Image (cartoon, rainbow, N blue to C red; front, top):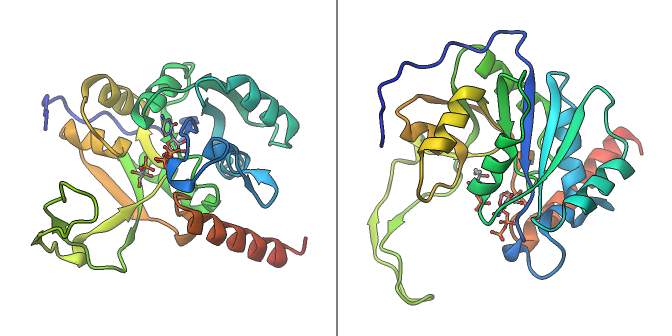
Length: 254
Ligand SMILES: Nc1ccn([C@@H]2O[C@H](COP(=O)(O)OP(=O)(O)OP(=O)(O)O)[C@@H](O)[C@H]2O)c(=O)n1
Ligand SMILES: C[C@](O)(CO)[C@H](O)COP(=O)(O)O
């Protein structure tokens, strides 16, 4: 942990404008062969478009920056142009990098001034409800420098000594108390200056942006996540996403 002892930034004011960075540059190796994951169809529409619409559904969001596969920025721009999106929201597309962390940084670098709250949302979480997005924004407006949507776990979690050879039995070394564990989702919300500082300061392996803020020694808070905000990672997740979408369409009557 690198606590540089600087004070927490002041709370973003209630009028602060919100921008979203959507890292969408991953290949989707765990989903199996095919187009980059964000461009694969869900209910006939690219997963990325669902994620963009989910973010733009919040009236607080005025800008969405999509971080495209490194050689796919033109294709992503065409996709955004071809789909109906709210007119009150601006869209930017930038090419991404080799890791999620690098892609988020490239998205942050492209943000124009005037947005004091920044959300980071995985393109791979296409079905997050707008209430979850708004709850994250509200917690940042209320003064938290970093906010994660989170859910309690259903499984017991074991810490193991990872096998040197895949498939070998792995010794269990600890069982963390489940009641204190949470599975965290996106969008994760930040005071912009805090997130920029985290990406400029923290190096090494991190799996989410809030973890980088923790390494600055700042407090990250969790708000309730949503079961439909799950990440499409493996083939079975896509089956579940199709089912959730079909149920929504049935309920909405189209
Ligand atoms: N170089 C990368 C890697 C990932 N991502 C994005 O980060 C999000 C979460 O990553 P993940 O679900 O792991 O996606 P992939 O990296 O595509 O999946 P995999 O690890 O199975 O290849 C996704 O929206 C993905 O597009 C990105 O923008 N740039
Ligand atoms: C950011 C994240 O979605 C929070 O749960 C997750 O850590 C991303 O992991 P991935 O392996 O890059 O999909």
